[in-house]
Image 1 (tube, rainbow, N blue to C red):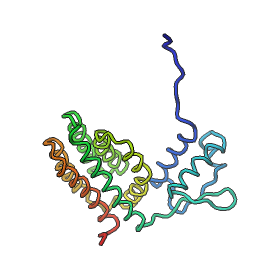
Image 2: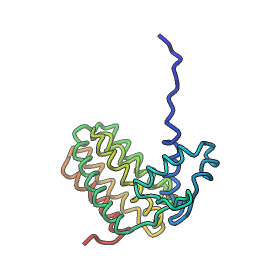
Image 3: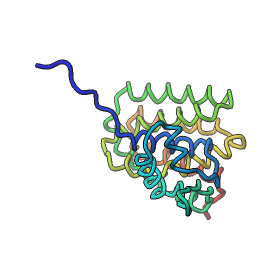
Image 4: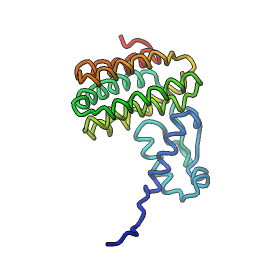
Length: 217
């Protein structure tokens, strides 16, 4: 048996895509900013082909738009689009919680507690990047335990619109409310209360949406 095997690496287009998506979501690349595939290729140290493939995927997801002359523009943040996204995100996360609770072990609940503690610390330090990453880890425990890969795939396309708005308005948010909501979710998961966990997770996302884009009524 061979112990030395080829090390698998993500295709260049996927690496470029993930890097650009993160730059867009965190507002390193600002709404309305123009970028060129030639310049990006030089920065990444790759050919223009993986850059163009990554930009095409980002355009399909509504994060960039093509312009004449091999230029691309970062799309503006659309509040109505974000409002619609929050409705879908909340429903998908709520479904994931309903599916996850019967499968969750104490180790999963402890991971949620750990992530929530990291979120609290990041909020106290006004560290938006680490706060969002900790929140993602919290919900990823539930998504993973749900056993439904399709939910995660659907969220991958929608979440950047939600997170980009969150980054833009982070300073005006009362993140400690989310900490309290997470504690209730943890309790519901620990006691195997599917319906309660699902409704709490859904409300967690809907309440964030109301803070960011206003009431959906």
